Length: 242
Image (cartoon, rainbow, N blue to C red; front, side):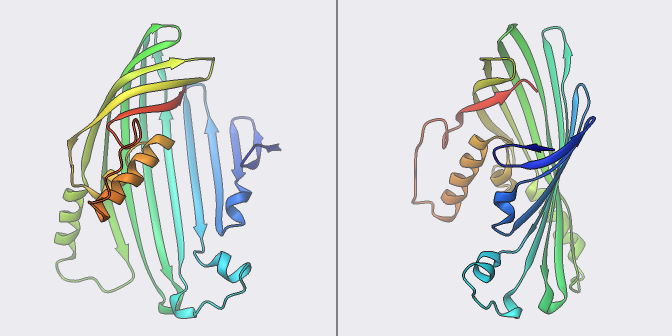
């Protein structure tokens, strides 16, 4: 058994299962499973979300059955580090799936997004790495319990084409101890500047903030907020050796 700052779980050998109780009490019931090898991590996070959980349990509010809904999300990835002397290759593949369930209507809709990146780094010194990274993502499929229109496949193929994006990054990482480092780089879009998946690109906390402000700009173009290394294409982020 182990307890961390935000999670509690159990590990045996190379396998680990855990949950984050602070999210459970907010109605974001979650479960994580991980498997480690010397150079690879397999990780799967599943969330069962009740958006009205806080209102029903803590505020004692009655939520009408016709507006009740549940959300299921899963993010699964496999990440590998392969080292050849000063060269480091990092392939990363991820599938993000989600479903919205409406119990009162006996209906649901679900979708899958696939994305990943390939990164190549070169160690100038033991603690200093130069890297380049190419990331891509696309909508894989959408399913629904509702009756589909005749042109469903056409609409779905158009959505796939519009969702495709390709981005690239270049930069450097300084590792200040055995495990952790600080990365400084620049990101740019190669393809898919209008793809809605640009709001989920990246993998770090810095990327989440960057995507959040991009979404704000999209909904309210007049709200221009400039924060160095967060809203700009130049970014500063924490990193790890693995």
